[in-house]
Image 1: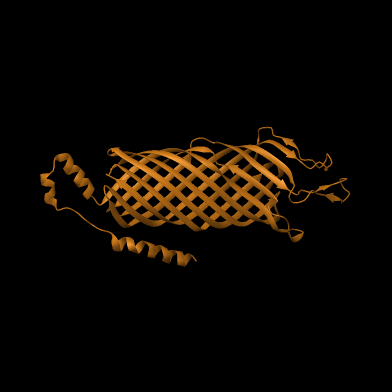
Image 2 (image 1 turned 90 degrees about the vertical axis):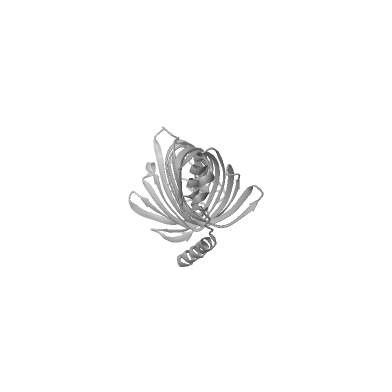
Amino acid sequence: MRILSLVFGMLLMFPFMAQAKDYRPPDDTLIALSKPQQEESALARRLFHFSIAPSVGLMRGHATYQIGGHVDDPTGSYDIWFPLSELIFPLNVTMGGMDFTVTYDQVWRLKTELRKNITSSAGNMKDSDWGIPWENPPGSGTYYWYGPDSLDIYSESTTELDAFVLDVDVMGKFAQTTLQSAVISFHGGLGYRYQDYNFKCSLIQQWDNREGAPPSEKMDYIGDGSVALTYDVTTKIPYAKIASTLAMNNVFNIEASVGYSPFVRVQDKDNHLLSSKLSYGDCDGTAVLLSLNGRLDVLHPVFFEMAADYISIDTKGKQTQYTNGSWSGTLDQKYFSTVNSLELLVGYKF
């Protein structure tokens, strides 16, 4: 599959080279122009153009994992319900960053986006467990449970987030048409997105809803403000992307793009500090990336840009658990995430 994807990428990029137009006015056209016009014309004639744009924006969403299904542990192999447990980590912070763009011959574009959180309070993490049995009386070997659809234990924790995002793409123009004063162009290419989220969660309160459980089995807690759980997750997304741009009078343009990846890799680490339990997840799946950008060039070479992005990730794999340093089990895992962001950028072209 990876070889096919590389071939697909090469085929995708070939039309850009075959259809790219190269028009340059002769040097003597500059003679009849004023000095500002000469400078603008000379700038347009350059093969390479650069821009840099700091950004600030809001990110809203979640990173969620579920476990259950097939289990391997020291007692053997068996199947349980899915999900047995679900943890929803909030992604509600303000992000700052920088965009770097290089354009070659008005056909090829290399763009790098860096993002880092500038606030850290992300909201409340929610932890849910279904179908948790209890022994009654303790030590009797007799167990009871309400069933896999019963939300038996639920907790919420305040969350501090440390987030970093890197996104690089290469795009090429393969078609262009003119409609009155507007120019419509179509682009395609490949990209790579890397996300690193680190959470620190401090328990607010945990509720044990199993009314039939004896007091010694109940797991009701009130947090003391200390960090009880950390969760680190990295996501690697190689993707293909197509985009359409509408430009009007070299002053305003709007670009819409769609990206897709069938090769998403997610690796995470859950550290339950209070129970000395470490869990490592490894999942593969897909991602959809949508974006809509509006750009205003009224103070050349300064420009203003508004960007809205949506990313959806859906993966599945395995989670391996260790308690007090020893392997305690391996379960099925699903990791999925949805993120919306809205950003304002002020850039400079040179």
